[in-house]
Amino acid sequence: MLDQRGQLLRAALGFAGLPSPPYAHSLWALRTWMDAWAGMGQVAILGSLIILVATTGCTVAPNASPTAPQTVPTAPATSARPEESPTLAPSPRIEITPSKALVDEKVSIRLFGAKPSQRVTLRARAQDDRQVMWEAHATFHADNLGMVDLGLQKPITGTYQDLDPMGLFWSMRSESWASAGSAFAKTELTPTPIHFSADADGHLLASATLERIFVAPDVTPTTIRDNGLAAIFFKPSGSRTYPAIIAVGGSEGGIGFGRRIGAVLASRGYATLGLAYFAYPGLPSDLANIPLEYFETAIRWLQSRADVQAEKIAVVGLSRGGELALVLGSTLPKIKAVVAYVPSNRYGRNVKPPRNQPAWTYRGTPFQPDSPIPVEKINGPILLISAGDDKVWPSGPMTELIIKRLATNNFGYPYQNLYYKGAGHAAGFPFMPTTEEARPRRHPVSGAIIASGGTPKENAFLKSDSWPQVLKFLEASLKR
Image (cartoon, rainbow, N blue to C red; front, side):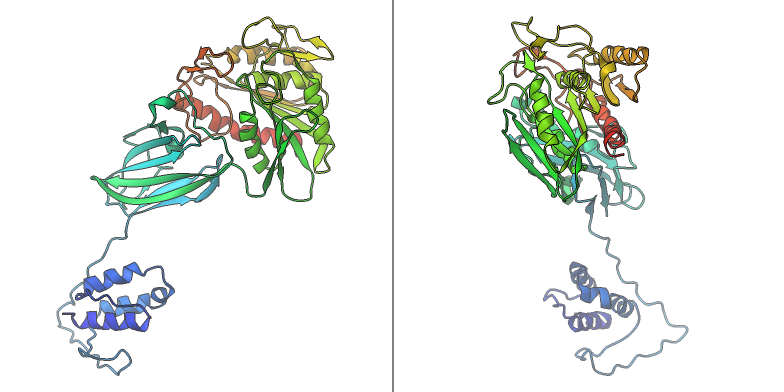
């Protein structure tokens, strides 16, 4: 049966409008029931009163009404100390801040309510757009307060080793052997939930979900098939005009890179055109004799729009798209800024036989393969991102030659090369899995087996370190 404090606690619960459990025959059980309603306003209001009642020597008649007058005896000074009420530890929980975030945004992940110094494993799981499951995990010792903070603590063991608040993101591994060498597939712009859990001693402690957003809610994507163009246009909401960015991928062809990075850049306040230029329906099948007039059409299309700032257009490219970004900037004066990820300093050729075909032409004249790109003709600032362990081509030495050529010709705009010694042929926004990037894989156009180089950790660092600098560069080049 309930003691006198328990009866008064039951009465207080009833006054608050909370049901009393039929199995609550002790003070401890009633307090447990109260904890289950801890998020309700009634408990927030009466909580202090209930705790005061439960921890004092107040008495109540066995069948007393909560509104009936009560007699509260005064304990003598020599009376024994009242029995202490048991203290219940809070239930473990995972706190993710924010719980919905853009894909390039850092989040805070913390576990509360573990036992002090308890060994706890945190796990992250996500499914890509091919229905392949990816997983990462890391084990920690909770601190003296029973908390694990990924931003402050280094894991004991796991899929990553160093202090890294986003380690559970880039270190995710594919659970399918058939996906070895394939990136985390993101063919749609729908949000991707990432499910987190914490376990200890074989028992689940807590779970939570983060929703990762690939395009901001106020950005509208539109498929473009005008004037021979094959693109996706991303427009931020509002009636104002925006600086524009053309995003182009590399020798894989298609529109994947342009769609992915274009969506994220638009979420940061740019009108972006993710542009395919070969290996896409209605376009050439090979990276050979691609006319730069196609890109002039894209520029004119952007400039014709009332929501685009016609004199503020940049191009962002990856690999052969990085080469293309330099080629466009040095040929078309309307390009006012260039971001080139792991580019070549020379005009390229077709990626499959016949390999003697030039990649680019302009006004009927091909650009001679292997001749240097006249980067000093670019009409705006340049940002290069290069890698020291690039296995596709030597982007590190080639960007050094670009920098040397710019210096020799007294280039009149700012330029910079972000060099990552341990990274491979990697690029783009951060916090996506990099564990499969370094594995050999079959090139989608040439069919050759290629390897990108670097390690998952170094490739993830290239992306997380360079991305804020890319955003800063674009803001300085286009928004000021």
